[in-house]
Image (spheres, rainbow, N blue to C red):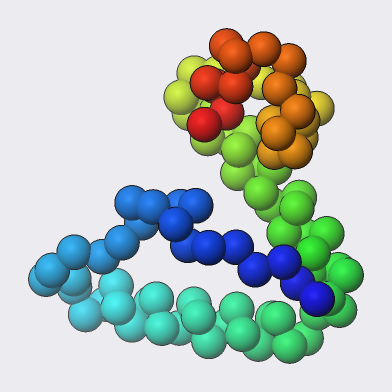
Length: 92
């Protein structure tokens, strides 16, 4: 079974008032396509892909923020295996 995560992990990714119709349409389309993908993929494959995408997202987010982190450090952080408090702050 696929590990479902709470959307609170990506807050503040919430729509405010006066969201353009095109944005809402795209969001609905994305949900539909992700449902199709979920039905099509083997659950183990989907879980592996989600893990890879999560790590990739952390890697590029850290680069954008000016942190040149290594993938093994990100993987440890995602597993809550921090070397010290300073690195823990980087991965929040």
